[in-house]
Image (cartoon, rainbow, N blue to C red; front, side):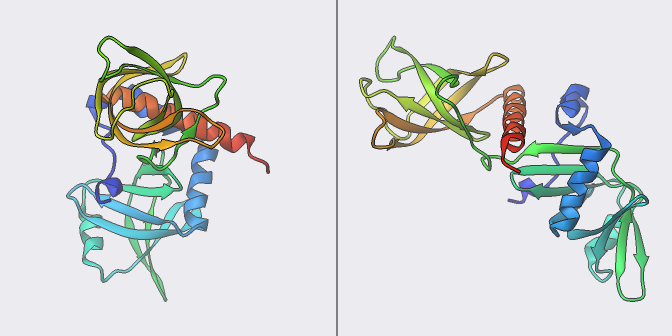
Length: 250
């Protein structure tokens, strides 16, 4: 859990394109996300460059910037103010938000103190690992191409039933030799759509039956991905979430 509250690395090694993949570009969309943090009293973790972390809530949002409720007696607050850099991390459902804090300043009022910061110029969105699962449609379902570990030379193309950052569920037909939990499969080729393909190492976590009217076995798999593949997967899931929100009744 601690790692999830730390800022994601967006350094030069990731390149400018990596930043662009997750950046919230439009000012109105950034403002809408900040309003959700404020209106929902969502915990926001402020992380200093020296590792100091302080959990606060955003209670003010205006043209001058952000206002966080602050307790001046907390020792982390002084270290946060003295730090060279500070980054805010918060969660909205399954999405991790991250933004830099500029011009941090503690303002004392008659009844309470406020930690002020400028409006963020950029906000980044990251899919929280395993928190959101995309259920696929049978007509254009993604596929996983792999070698059956128990049958040498048997190449399989299995339907992907659902997808998350941490893994997927596959449909194994009844006419194939069963796979046991703990089985590992290296070099599986995953095709989510025409533009999203990657290789993954799969580890079978569990097996289960489908609905009574369906045939086959559900294989729940965790996967290990290269950084570029995980980035592509995050974008694919994020796009699926957006399509789901747009199609939901209002």
